[in-house]
Image (cartoon, rainbow over all chains, first blue to last red):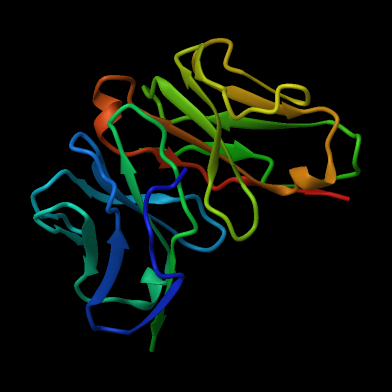
Length: 109
Length: 117
């Protein structure tokens, strides 16, 4: 079962930063936080993952709180192509990915 | 690099008929996954292969679903007989084999949309 809580939907203005929150208050010490997104009619796409340090790649930044009970995915300059469902997943490496229902992000022109 | 290929993209069948889906993973990826995604829900893992062996099929309805990966590359997922509740998108994904693949991402195909009438 999914061990994360995400808002069902969010809007963001094009060009602004999109901040997607995720609550994972029961995360254990060896579980990583992963983010995937799914654009309509496509398969999910990996974005980023982290354990406790903040991470950044060419797509996004991942901010994990010090107690690791929550995290935020940041898309620094949202574009219309970032409209998608975003999934936050906690997982022990090697175990299953449990996808919840995610956050549906709509980027508004 | 070429991505995960799936066919067909769409399939409409009547209940009690059988159907098969095909997946070709990214070259060199030892681990292959089949997921079921019902409308409005996240993907749910059905079965995971490591090379041609099954790692996890705990959520596969074995009375009607079967999957194989005979040569450790391509895979086929079959449903026989189909029920109305099998209407969903069937996603195939692949990743590097363990242990490297445990840490990183899975690469997903575009999926097959199945409608059972």
